[in-house]
Length: 372
Image 1 (cartoon, one colour):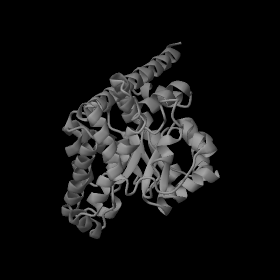
Image 2: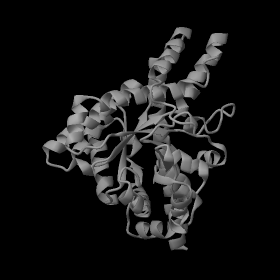
Image 3: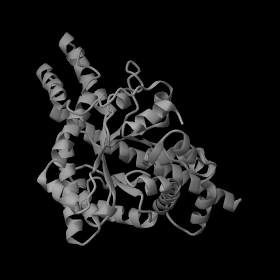
């Protein structure tokens, strides 16, 4: 186990891997990462599954069997991905038994449903039933239409990873949706201790979008603000989280057995080569949070990441001052977050289309083999 990753875990940051493949599961790689690299959870998305299915032969036999059974592409995708997540949940079950907040594996509702509340709820229920593991998390996007789906899923006892959160305003709405769901679950007599949730606050994309706007403005004052917005935004989010956890509403739910919806720092791979490749890990260390990393970022932190104590608590005012400066130089923050959410949903829809195309190609290849 590397000392740097252990130090990060010891600081209270749960290290989750933002990747999954059948190869990782079957070769023991995922178990090795748990044992040697302090990995205690996994997140997935359609892009991850498309890469896994396109690059590996481990899916071929199952695809062939499903094609012979006459099922369509959506059913094939559902079967392949839920099987992988179920098996990954089993690998991480000992982690979940020892530390129930962790040992979690996330699977996403179909992204094309991001603006359809009822269809998102139905997709979440179907995924939860199919994976059939208590340490699964169903990813639901934090769109306006996704918010009532989050409440409904939590209210039904489904553990949820809320994804695609960019603004603190929307994050507050997500936390409200979570509390409303817990209140519904309590009314329904569901044991609140069985429900877990994380709120995935996206980081790197905020710098990418705001930096581009600062460079377009071009003044010395604007250019001096580059590379700071993403971390500041996350620190503001954490300050909002602390407010909610201190509220009477939350305290009543906690007394009934509820667990906090932990902040999860997502999109923590650094996109600008001018910045440290561990920036969104080192600068967001705070206890009882999750950082989900692509393996490249995990490796970088293991090699040269630093843990220098809590970098988040008590820094909300400082972060707000930076955002005030961004507004003052001409950055339209409301538009930034609207663009980021719209692009985020669109990118996930494109990823889904790519996943469908990948699986259709596998199905066609299998049909060709059968006819040969």
